[in-house]
Length: 150
Image (cartoon, rainbow, N blue to C red; front, side, top):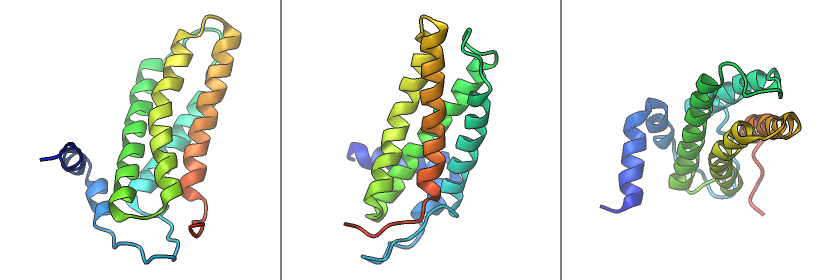
């Protein structure tokens, strides 16, 4: 069994909304389709919105109170972004969103680490700002109207 198939099977079993997303029909070539209302992608938007609101309220003076829980939730969001990437890859659709979701999934842990390892309030403020921007981007890319392939 290839690693890709094993990973896909593990992800399908971990979250019912992933299985539902995979079951969606394959897109008609040339016809852009919005995924924003599908359960998996709606969950991504809801989680990213909530985390963005929390991150916007964090102080840059120290690692924020409640950081461990925030990090756990953000890591779960990154996992959902990767699942969204894999679902779109399986469907063979929406190349831009597919790639952006993968990038966000890979960037969230890096931004979390940057907040934790910042050596000054200014550095932490920058890291928090970048994390907040990434979470906002997560919402906007999923809810943006689909564009035809170029």
